[in-house]
Image (cartoon, rainbow, N blue to C red):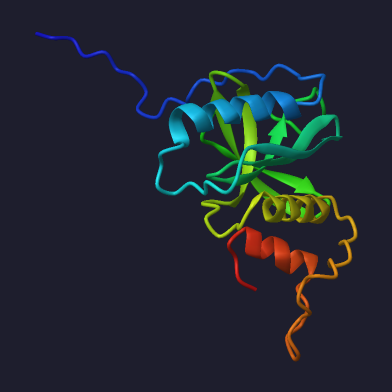
Length: 183
């Protein structure tokens, strides 16, 4: 008679604890995602070849690093462990909710073999509707201002005015649209 070994059906995935990053992760993240772009993503049908890879606005918030990563396939708010209060180790694929100045946001955990554990909040994916890097940078900067509760910048003079009878979009409305939600 064969003996069955019982294993838990829903064993939680292992958690690799994050190592705090003391230095700004901008260059590290850009190098990583440029490599991914050149080696694995450049032929994918959903990428926007008008975009490159750039990490925007990474700054310490509650001791951890928060900023936006732009790639030809996504625009994500990214949290990197810096030894602070915001981070919490969770298994890759799990979600957690962070209270930020703009409100509560959902982050997904990931653990890349090259960059280690990180968490991200998808802002736009795919990014096929972004015309170029200039527009992607504006969206990233606006998202960061919204996340940190900073005043919105004045619209650039070359942008068309808001149509008559159509209310201007609030920062909250802008961020809801980035998140794919309608009022």
